[in-house]
Image 1 (tube, rainbow, N blue to C red):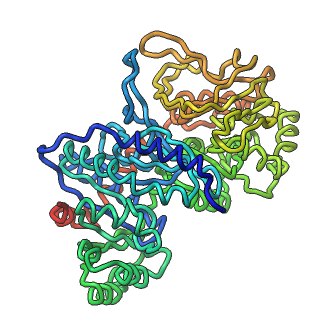
Image 2 (cartoon, rainbow, N blue to C red):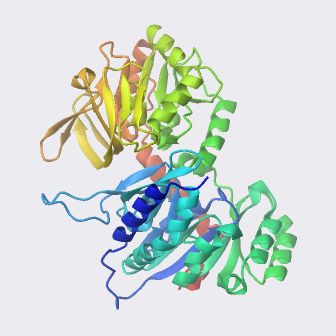
Image 3 (tube, one colour):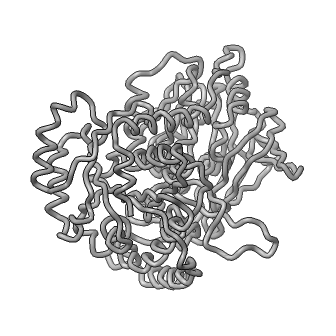
Length: 540
């Protein structure tokens, strides 16, 4: 099918306008760069970059992460965007992939759109929302986007230059596999970027999935002589067992490619206690949690929507010893044992409403509430709980209205302006400090908004109601991503839901401390598994 010419022309025009950014000043000292490319998706690139960021930061270096193009519906708000400052002087917000947000945290640096200048947010199997340096450009099909990619390279290179001017070391993450030869002509995130920016490349392979030798040799075969020359070595990730057993494979790879092995990175169990980025990781998390359910006071069932977004909102609940968090897969009923059913965020709310109904979950939810259960919606999940979701401009798909679940007296209209906001406030309901962010294109109104879930008081003193609660008190929702990361709020809410049964929240669990401790632990492991002095010297 040929792409819609009007949509392509509009996006191309927006792209040409967006590319007219003010170039970074030249003549300033530049930090070193080292690029990590992978032999496949989910080989651990994002985690390795985060660990290296923390390790070098702890050594006293100014380190920043960079990923030219990311495809993920898990995103985070930044304090900057490539857009004019509003007349009222309010800060302009952008968004980047959640993996780069974690890497920025590992560097103890502010999140910036330049860390992930191109973000693709899938809306279905073909179309993505295209975000350039924090701003939504529009929707493009996969074939449309391939034609647009070359025009993005100037912005990508400029963003990388800006980071190098601020850092001693920029660690660059590739996307998926660097050896996908059919994507090479339009590549802006793997060898295309490495050649354009003159980057040294470290190739990462995953021992846990097998086939390391074939994966590395295959990339050597597919790359050109100039691309091979950029590779300064390979690293084997997620290794278990005796390194001596792997030695013959390392010798074979080194002899065939001329690339030295730079280390074996052992399996890091703490990876599962850090925020995950995409659905590949969610598949593993789902299987692990459901294979070994833990003893619990409270069971939280999460609907695995087809376009689930920001599912790491639920990590703090999963970390609670007294909470059994279960993902409900397509074709499965919502378990009757669930105390809470949670609807997470979605990149395509109306599409996921249809998906939800196709599973029969709408009937399960009504029965669940009638029997005294609780229902929670976050962002897109909040929108689904209302009476209608309207998209008159066709922002997320064909224009039209979709009936919601009717569990909250609210209605939502999708608009073309995305709300991006950082939240750091005191919640008067729980008495706890709450931090997080809003990221949505819908505007929600209705009577149940007069019963907000949170009452936020900001540093400037203004109070903001957030979310909605049903008259029964058993259905509630919020636009606030990260709300459960606030330990005090999470404990207060869990205590209310558990009722009599309840002191289930672990008062000793600090979710933020848990993330920091695992970043530190991984950095310490990398100090042992890799020669960090040698890797730094390889950067240029």
